[in-house]
Length: 257
Image 1: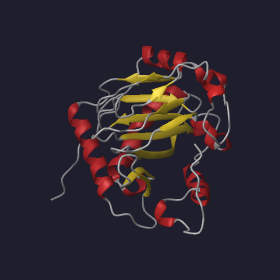
Image 2 (image 1 turned 30 degrees about the vertical axis):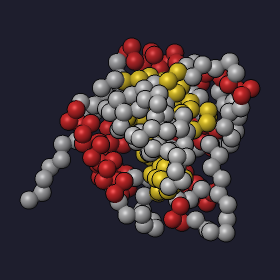
Image 3 (image 1 turned 60 degrees about the vertical axis):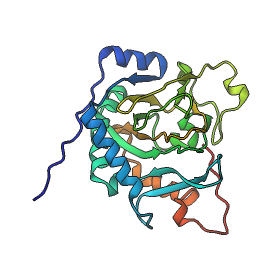
Image 4 (image 1 turned 90 degrees about the vertical axis):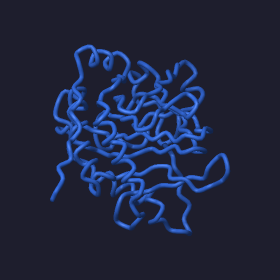
């Protein structure tokens, strides 16, 4: 007998939350998902982590632990085509993204960032620096907290209002000169919390020297009127930064932003 799985409820932004996003370039929704829905999302993340690493399936990237040199999962991308739960979640999150885009949203990319014990951080950057302007004018990224994210294990940090400056630098992290007048605000989150920000909002996170993992799910959307680019985006990325299992051992791959 087939067991029906209850899909998480769709978070909808209030007028005040939309105004906060317009002011800061991001907005934080505490308890966007209730306990039951959060447990479902955590279970889905566990399932994705347990999937075998195979050619032509979800994209798995690794890193070396900064604590003891072990091999760690760093990130898994392109999940929804191979997991029905995350496929449904991308549709659910598109509603809130569409509120900020002020029209229907289409999925551009999605991933789980793992940041396991010993996992590295992310230098200050704008997502648009990765060449996203080739696809659409702006994007909304929706982050769902899977494990508690704290100052100690490298929670997301965002710079309010700095998105209004537009693209600051291309294809490399922001420099000290770029960020000297910025204030990065740490945003600790609990499982089920949601953060939305645009592609020009500078953000960063610290390494994780603790014994606890810090997983977060990111789904990124653009305006439907600007096209559906997910297939082209992953085809382009595959040429320059494919998943580890597809890499040429004689080629050096450099993660830029």
